[in-house]
Image (cartoon, rainbow, N blue to C red; front, side, top):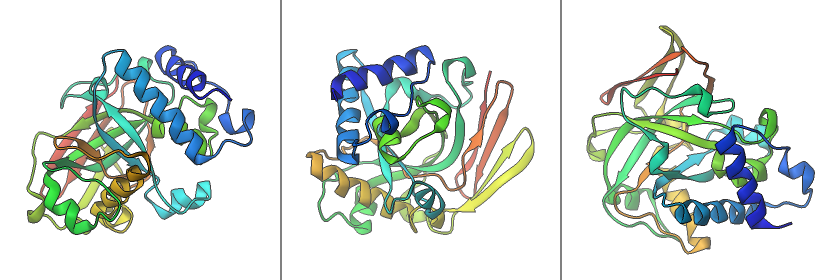
Length: 257
């Protein structure tokens, strides 16, 4: 198994919207640590292309998704500047394979966080503020037939993300109880609260900082950290319009074209 060649294959699948076969079927011994190495090899390739890492995303923060994949902790992926959509900017469906959207809280960091030993209190001290966010997830693995190493290798199934226009100081928010409503084409389809994210969204960010310590990676000032989906992901098609409403954080809209 050649880690760099698999990284190249996944990036080609993303660029051409041509999915590949399940990695864990092709490489039955593929473990999570090797999958993270594949993801980090993609980071090197993206940097070589001139792209910039602007943050990280955390996935599998809900108990339901963890049970589905048979794991007991989240995973993560990297966010790049070319993945960011400005508020009001539509998302092109034809640039993706089978996108789904999730409502999340975005942490904007002002200080460095590096594990091990990072706590929720450390996350609060290091966070400039919270913004509402929509993450568009996508899988370069055919038909979303994935196990944990598949989605880890595939950059946490990340694709695009949108940030709201308002940032609120973290100390002004009750992150566990902050409410979210998601509408699709004017119909409410999901609602939830921040506690659905690993018990507390800041706990998910602390987990990430500690997990990255194994790779000698820190969360840096200015990075955007998507803390995890508050509700289940929703399929998106061309013409769909999504509205994400957070108590105290405002409303965020996204249209697929």
